[in-house]
Every structure is written in C-alpha cells, then in structure tokens.
Amino acid sequence: MENKVKPKKTVVDAFVEGARNGFSISANSMAPNVMFAFVLIQILNLTGLSDILGVVFQPVMGIFGLPGVAATVLIASFLSMGGGVGVAASLYSSGMIDGTHISIMIPAIMLMGALLQYMGRILGTANVNNKYYPQLFAICFINAILSMFAMRLIVSI
Image (tube, rainbow, N blue to C red; front, side):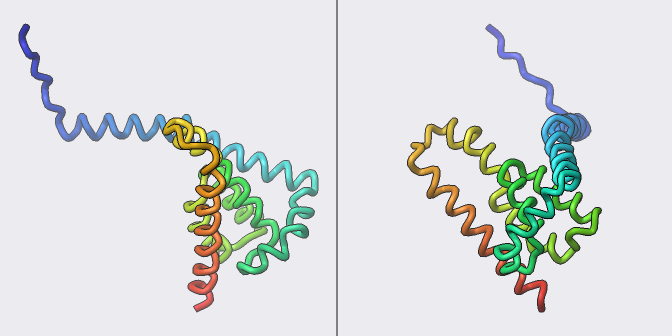
C-alpha cells in the first residue's frame, strides 16, 4: 500500500477554514445564548420581576457597588457566558447599569461563566465524581466574588 501524502494547506486555506469554523460557532452557539439573554431581560422587565430581583438582591450586590438587578447578569452567566454578556448589554442599553458596573462584573462572568454547561460537557465527559462538583463550583464562585471586590477597588481609584 502506498502512503498518500496530503497536500499542505496554504495560509489562506487555513485562515478561511478557521473563519468558517468561527462563524459556525458564533451562529450556532453564541448568538442563541445572547438572544436568550435579551429575551430573558425583556420578560423580566415586562413582568416587573427585574424590579423585584433588584430589591431582593440589592443588599448583596451593593457590597460590590452594584445595583440589585445586576444579579441577573451573574445568574445568566452561571447558565451561559454569552447569556451573561447579553444580559449585561441589555441592562446597559436600558440604563439599568453603567460601564463601571460592567467593569466590576466582567471578570466574574468569565470566572464562573457557563458552569452549568461545563458540568455536563467537561466534568461529566471526564467522569469526575459528582461529590466533587460542589467544591469545584465553590472555587469558581469564590474566585468570582474576589474578582468583583478587586474590580470595585480598581474602578474606585
């Protein structure tokens, strides 16, 4: 049997293939999450639940210099990082949070984003024992909390 040598890809071929893959990920994964986030915020606003969430979470979120409604960003981030970013963008565009609030939350979104999805995709696939899930999630939450404290200090300088 002969070994067939695959032709080398050119830089342009590699770039085009990467662009196609990136577009596919964006269209199939990120866009639906962001769309979900905007719809979620609209539902919360129309039903008045965002006001209730704002009041309920104000004491906790106030520790970080955030309005109570900012908790919806972190809740959405737990489900989907893109969703958390989408909720933040929606709250920003409606004037409920400002750039400083987003600056405080961005590291937390990244540190705990999509934990629920990763639980199935990574921990489940790697056969991590379920008894370790709480500790793994706690590490992410603690890191997110510490990052919000750090960002609050940084933006106040």
